Image (cartoon, rainbow, N blue to C red; front, side, top):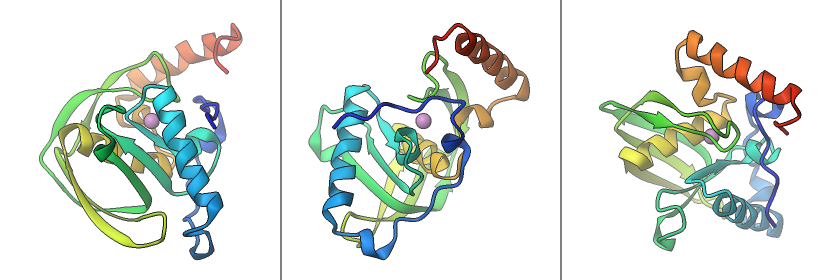
Amino acid sequence: MVYKIVLYGNPVLEAKCEPVGPAEFGSHALKQLVADMFETMYAAKGVGLAAPQIGISKRLTVIDASAGENPAEQILLINPEILEKQGKLHEEEGCLSIPGFREPVYRAQKTRVRAQDVDGNWFELEGEDLLSRAIQHENDHLDGVLFIHRISPLKRDLIRRKIRKLQKAGEWD
Ligand code: NI
């Protein structure tokens, strides 16, 4: 099932998400949610999607740096914890919840993360460049942090003003 993506302005996007609990691992409901998140991300042509972006305040995110080109690049991170960051990137970033806006954001060039799979098993993963950016961007979502929180206040206010206009015009929902 393809979910509707929640847009900036909805408080769920700026709330800290709850961990996925032990009873949920391996359940049909969790597997279905993961499948739906991949389906929703591909339908929106994104490279990452976090659960709060479909209105579910849980620490779960899906990533595919190949944007559906290579099934081997499908990544599911449940209850992720970033262990290590190295180097620096400064590249344009966007977000499916803030469509139409892109800004350069500072991120680490390499990220090592620890997370659980759908059965609750812990694993570690290292990402570079686009994958590193995606891991950091999606992990931020789980703490209620958006890429516009990582740009200058001036640029952030400009984007917020433009979004407010779109909201008033009924073009943002
Ligand atoms: Ni995003």
